[in-house]
Length: 346
Image (tube, rainbow, N blue to C red; front, side, top):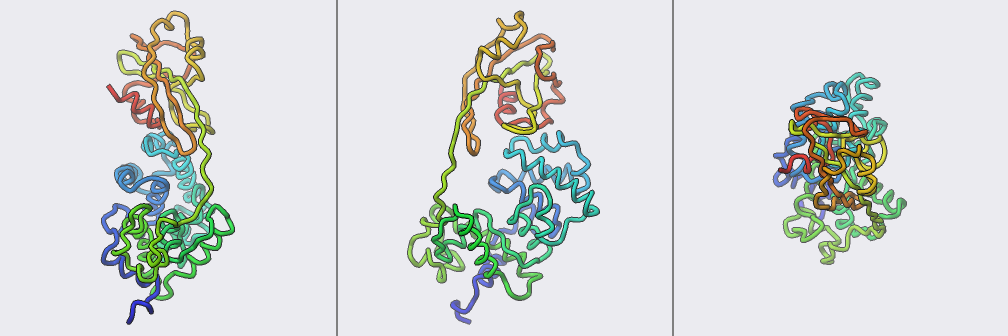
């Protein structure tokens, strides 16, 4: 059979079988819990980072029932450092919904999966196609890049209308036969292509199974796809952090509100200025404050300029803020990455 007669899906499926990724800890399984967990973790996070987190979560919470039954603080503590903490909160809610509404079994189709907290259209499709062979397209960032280059899709994906059009085309490219085997391999294959060959910079087109049918490859213009003009508007905030510790290793922490920066996590008490921090403390301890070097922490839409202020005490005492957590307690609660780094760096 000439390559021109082989469909996009057939080329991807055949390539994935021989050259795709097969060694990731969440692969080679059709357990929807493991696949769903990995898909949530992989949102805006690199595979190299997710590997260890995934293994720790599966060891601590091996089933959806164990995750649903766990206190949220335990889940956030294990998630600590992975970022985008709303994913962890929604993941916990989704596990509880699976137990309460679906008898402990994940729904077997994408439409029902989307009713669970934190599961969008592409994540639902990934779980449904990988685990239940549902013929439904995914469209995460990697797949958008693969398809727009393959199709020469030049419409601006900042427009919801154009993104809907790409969804429709993606659906039309799915395998048409032997779906039980082909759908999971196809879904994994388009993700693998985007992650390993069809990369944002310096794509390895000469190794790609669809290069001879790819518009961008034939034109030598893969760098032009996908088209998305809308830029994120960045902002900046400055915060002074009270780093109060005792000789025994107790740390003063307070739980953040359910909305806003680091929602629901435990953080050092935060103030908009050094003067505000100083004025909030009892007079006897103010002279012990030591300003540390400021640093910048980058979030998706915002730069945080953080100014740690150290306060060393012989023992825990009431400061009018938060609660003291012992040296055995604070390491396991959910902490923002920069706070954990401050507390663990000598």
